[in-house]
Length: 296
Image (cartoon, rainbow, N blue to C red; front, side, top):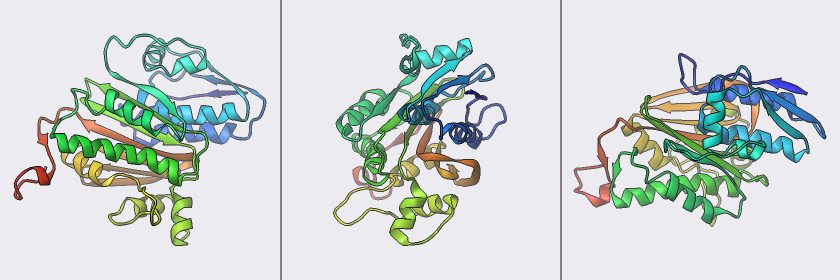
């Protein structure tokens, strides 16, 4: 079986952020029932692949390999091959991992559900202390770390995934943005919201419900939640973006603007992606660390 993959990007050259996720959801829809097959993914038309999307792409390919199938990535453009070799993605599919001499990648990783300590070390060493991130006080750095770890923790506790958690990131100097994405192959936000509230919401409405203040599907004695409250506050001030995909729902927040749409096919889990505006020269801290009149 051969599948032709289009360009995978977010807000690039006039395209919308949801289109890259929609292309990956179509890939999943066309291959999800395959078992014991050789699946060729033809990337001749993939002239651009936004590297942090490797988290979602890797989750889908891992699902295919578990069925089990053999996955081959074919006709990879030189520029795409370079970036997917520098972040280590292609090393999982017969390619080589080459040194990241440019220092722009956050490596592609898959973590088992028991690997919380390794994920914590990964975001500590590869993400939150990157020089491109706006200056933060020590207290905010700690809270920032905790908020990102909560995304991992939520996937472990509430998604029901047995396939692990996938993560990747990329710094884009020309666009002045730093992207970081986490994906899982769990039951998804709509299912969690239905089980908790009893309400049959659309995927988009379920994501909206889950991102509203004070709404959470965590139970007594069990930590969890999307971990987006502090991240959302920071990225809103920073001028960045948060994207969430679950089932066929897409939700995006840029500054104070929220955009939602329905994908053509469901994504088999949940993706949370953040985009930090690295042109931001502000310094940030917690309200508790400064005077009562200064918040962030």
